[in-house]
Length: 91
Image (tube, rainbow, N blue to C red):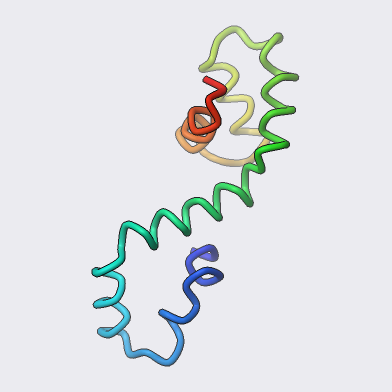
């Protein structure tokens, strides 16, 4: 939600609630993608993900174990971590 505010502040400011909803409906996919990308980059920076991945990979039993350990380190869900690792072509 913070990513939405940071990137799309103009949609929130000086608009009434119904106008805001109309704009969101028209651009929902782009708005969601942008906010999700920013949030992912803040919570799971690429450099930190790569270094953690390479440090943990040799000591993990499988990808499930690796995902679980990395999710704990970055304090995100296992699903979010799996998506991040896939988006970076690490798994």
